[in-house]
Length: 273
Image (cartoon, rainbow, N blue to C red; front, side, top):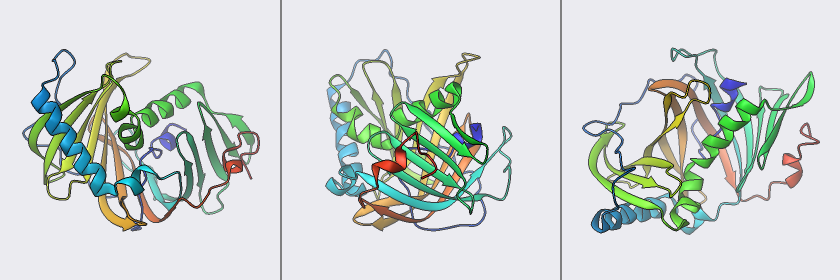
């Protein structure tokens, strides 16, 4: 179940099926994630950060990107162990997503492993039947959803009191990037690395606490192989890391937006529909 949660993220991605996992992308150079928790927001820095974020949203598709209401996605995912080694040859999946908080993943060729999230609840269906998702796994998924690019662009930027910081020019995924940090009033923070030429997001990072050990865990997600789909620039390769160790990777072959995905797809009492 833990590996399954690695493949969810609220950011959409699409088009370009690849049969083997990619090597780990390059780490950002010359700049670590900025620490701003106690630093007052500088008006000039905030203005520049806002301009970079506006460019990013426009590059992603502007209004078309912000108005995506649902998505159907097909591709292949890979899970990795704690050493960053692939745990298998990958598996096909079909994903249905509906803004803001509904998500469904159907896995394997028979699509007989189904995980559904609706609001703050979720369940899993296998040949053993349907059961509630373990509370620890559910908490991990909900945490990742709260840091998704969709949430950042649609919710974080609208919140009163959100602090923005332009951290300067750096290198990320072997590309020149603008580094921007956002801090919410509740002290949650995220750092985005945005391609200085295309203005598309390359990488996001944030830090959380392990609920058992209370140790800090850096969560990183990278985005590559963008394709224009229905007016939206869509990353078709998404890779996730925990403390610099690859945890999961998705390759997206097809995607469609705003087709009116049925609410019944997310009915927790009929997950096998």
